[in-house]
Image 1 (cartoon, rainbow, N blue to C red):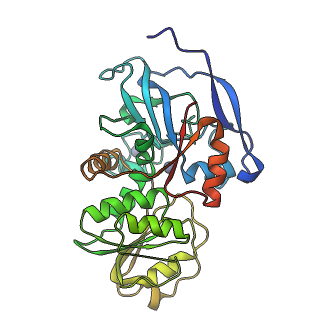
Image 2 (image 1 turned 180 degrees about the horizontal axis):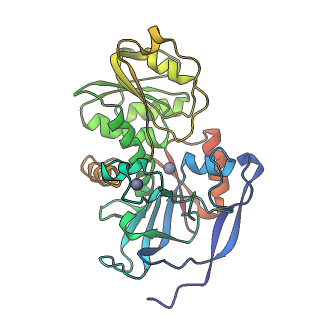
Image 3 (image 1 turned 180 degrees about the vertical axis):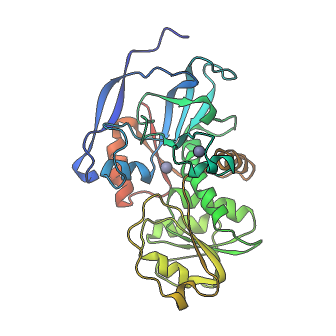
Length: 341
Ligand SMILES: [Zn+2]
Ligand SMILES: [Zn+2]
């Protein structure tokens, strides 16, 4: 183990959840964590900014750990190995993502749906995450990142990318089908690239000219506002915007037998659905809950094969609060990434 590791580090901490404009996070000195048995200590190189971090900071998600350090799209270098860890070398590039523990024994884990494990734990919610100089991860939940892609471009793949991929799987798009993407931020712009590469026709339904332009640049066939009708009925749709009002809108845009997959961890209330117009003809409404490690590995391999590129907006780590405020206000396209300065 290297003796060069400092004892303290700079890290963001959610002091008291509240509106992001009121600065609920502060940038503080904290001890560098020690890796527990089975864990890696990771020096954070970059950390993506996720809408979930905003939910944790604003209190849309209940506090799981007081004064938690958010952040769960970490690209880092292994700095130390906890007891019993083998197969990783110091300095190796690894990814730390949202899912960080499952029990492996419950009925959901045993049937291959560890994303539904009731005993699961999450990075940057239950345990301190990556808005810091160092973080930890159980070695079994780390991703190996031996791709020829930069640290900043890799970070958004680790949640925005993986969750977008699970949402795409849940949307069950038929071969060469028609897919609507409601909202076109970090997750959607990665998901769209996979879908287009697989021969799917993508229609972006999002506010903001910048987001619409990005969608078209990435191969979407059309781009319009979220409440507009797509140019053709949809076989599948994914709701990325955390806006429940869009659920009936998207359900009406589906063709018979179509599927709407809701990607967010948090959604405002869904208005009453009309059975005849919005559900009949075997339309399906599905949620997306976290991801399995298999989803993560599959997505990273596909991203490499299809040359999925994240459109990034880089901030120094010390400006994480600004990044979250900009995310909420929709001030950038693509994905925000924090880089330790
Ligand atoms: Zn389980
Ligand atoms: Zn996330």
